[in-house]
Image (cartoon, rainbow, N blue to C red; front, side):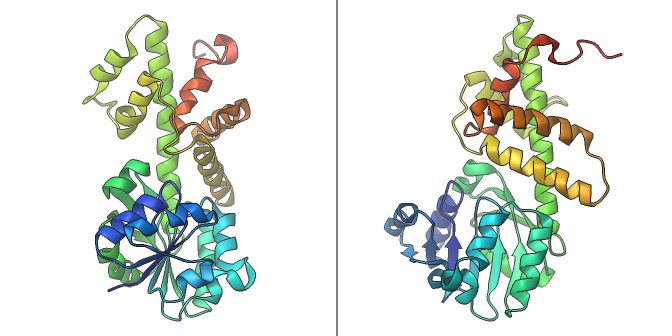
Length: 299
C-alpha cells in the first residue's frame, strides 16, 4: 500500500486526509500548528513533529499549503527539519497548493536534483469538494507520474493531466480567474435586481438553467442571497490568486484587463477588512460602493 505524507492540515488538507485514510491509505501528517494535525490522529493518521520526519517513509508526499512561500519553506527552508532532508530517492512530491507556475517549475528542478519526482496538482472545488471527494485536480508534470497517481488521487476527485511542469498551476490560475470574475458578475447582477425592487433569491432561481447558469451562481449566489459569508475559501486567497495570474501574464507580455479590474476590487475589499470572509464576500464590498464610483452608462 502506498505510504502517504500530507503536509498542511488546514481547511483543505484535513478533509483530504480523512478521505485518504477512509480509502485505506496509511497517512502521516504534519502541520505548523500541531493541534490541527493531532485532530487527525483519531481518524488513524500518524502525526510527525517535522516535515522531514513526516516524509521519511513516504512514497508520495502531498503538500496543501497557503502559498508558494510556505511551500518553499516547508520543502527547503527549515534547515534539517525541511522535507528535502527526509525525502527518499524515487519518491513523488505532489504539490496541491496554489502557487505561481514559475515556483512549481523551480521546485520540480530542485527536487529532481535530489532524485525526487514532482507533480504540481492544484485543485478546485473548495472545502465541499474536499469533503465529498469531488475535487477537480489539474496536474502538471510527467504524464506517467500523473497516471501512477490516479489510484491514490481517486478518493479526492477527478485528475486531468494538463501539460508539463507548471501547467497545473496555469490551469488553477485560469480557474481562479473565471471564479473571481464570475463572483463579481453574480454579485453585481443580484445587487442590481435588489436595488430595482426584484427579489434577488427569485432572480437567482429564474437564472438557473439558462445561459447564466454556473457553479458560482449556484453556490456563491446562494451565499449572497443568504448573507452567509463564513469562510470556505477566502477573499484573501482569491486576491492572492488574481495577483498571481496578473504576475504570470506580465511575464508572458499578456494583457488581462478584466482580471486586473476584478483584482483591484478584491484588493479594495481586503483593505476594507473583508479578507477573512468567503470570496463571495466581494458582494459586501460592492454593496457599499457609492453609485458614482463607476460610469452609469456606457459611452
